[in-house]
Length: 116
Length: 115
Picture 1 (cartoon, chains in turn green, blue):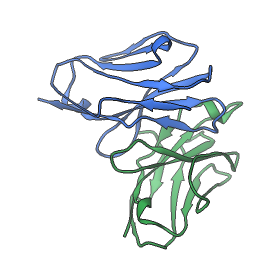
Picture 2 (spheres, rainbow over the protein chains, first blue to last red):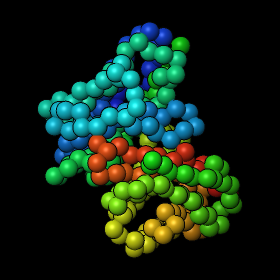
Picture 3 (tube, each protein chain N blue to C red):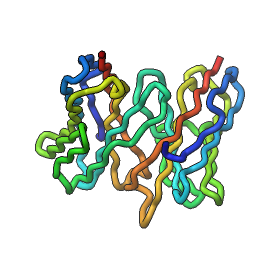
Picture 4 (tube, each protein chain N blue to C red):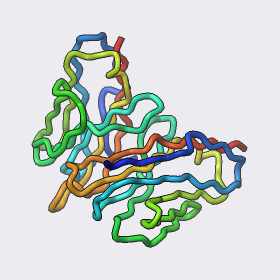
C-alpha cells in the first residue's frame, strides 16, 4: 500500500448535484494529482496541486475544481454533475523537490462515483 | 502531440508462460519519463517502474523486466514465468517535464493468467 487514502470509497449522486472527494497524501509528500478513469479506459489527468496552488490542469471544464490544504491533503469538487462524470477518481501523491513535474506519483485506491 | 499506445487490449496466457506487454509512446520532448503501473481489480494503481529519457539501461526486477528503446519509442514490459497473481490491467504512462505533473496513460492491457 502507498499510504495514499481517499474518501469516500463509493458514492452515488444524481445529475445536477455537487460532489466533494477527499485525498490524504502519503506521509512526507507535498504534491497531489487527480485523475478520472472511465470504465475500460486509462486515467485522464484532471489537475495537480503543489504548494496549495494548481500547478497544471488537463482538459476538464471549470466545474471541476480543487483545493490543497497546508497539510497537503486535497479535495476535488465537481459541480453540476453529468452522467458522463461516472468514473473512478484517483488521487496520487508525490514528493516534489525543485519541481513537481518530474516526480513519481503514487496512487490511492480511488473513489467510484456513479451519477444517475 | 504526446500519446501512449498499448496495442494489446487483452492477453491471456497459461501460468508459467512468459508474456510481453507492448508500449509505444510519442513525444517531441527530449526530457520525459516513462512508467508502468499495475491495476488489480481493487482499482488502485500500483507503481512498478520509472525510466528517464536519458537512461536507456534495461532493468530486471525478479520476474519482471523492461526494455526501453528510444530508437523505436518503445518501453516494453516482460513477465517471466507468469503467475495467476499477475492477472491485472497494466498501464504504460508518459510524463513530460513542463506539463504540470500530467501523466499520459495508454489504454491499458488486461492480462489474464490461467492456472
